[in-house]
Image (tube, rainbow, N blue to C red):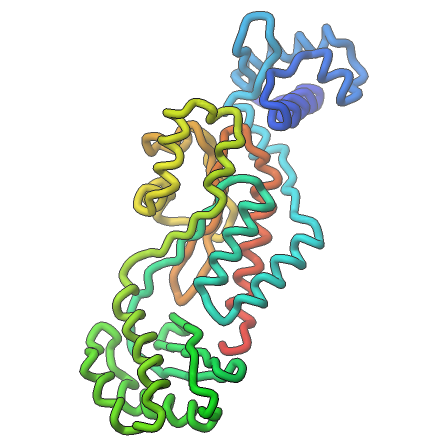
Length: 343
């Protein structure tokens, strides 16, 4: 059933007030705070109609109303305008990504911290498992004195980069020579068929540069060991404590358990997602233990796979702010992956 303009304004007023205060909203407060040019009695009648249609609920007799999940859904689908972070916040995000570009794990930690800090909800980032394919090349890129970047490329693109320490005596030409050595030995091999014995034979060929070779081998070892599982980064889980809905200790423990266990969070999210921001409100989440929460999330593409970013919080969520922030972060990650200097 559609709502007329007055009903929409009243629903929006109640949603905004309830999200801000966590208290039922009365008709007088709606008229006074939102300068509606109608009487409190008219608002009460409209609120009663909205309740009958399922968009509002009355938690106690003679109390004000609160939005139902159906009311939040209508607002999200038909009325909401995303609120993007301030220019200062976006500049800060780009600086975080720029400063941490040398190490993908640091990028994810920084993104997670930004999401949780801006929205005041728990954030999550899921980095997809690497689908190992055919080794294409390895590059050793000097970053600064005493540091280099190991960049592993397969036929599906860049799949890993890791910062390593190197002796100060090692020059860029040395790094290029070592990279060429790896490439001659490994190019064209299936990543799933790579054996550590393939790496071991490289050591003695350039004894004077053995420390760098060992570091590069460690990076490849890490890729072989850790490529089969999604990595989950959760930040700001304790933000949940500040929400009045979760003052009950048993309820809080259930929520924190979900956030602390990687497998549970991965199971909660749909397997197939797109780059469009998706919002799941309360009972729309079918997994046990999460029906008192809402999710705002989107996908991002990396190494031919789809990762996931988002926030998790109470049904009484600032959806407009959460959706705008998730979308801004997704765009920033895409820009980083497309324009990084070592692509």
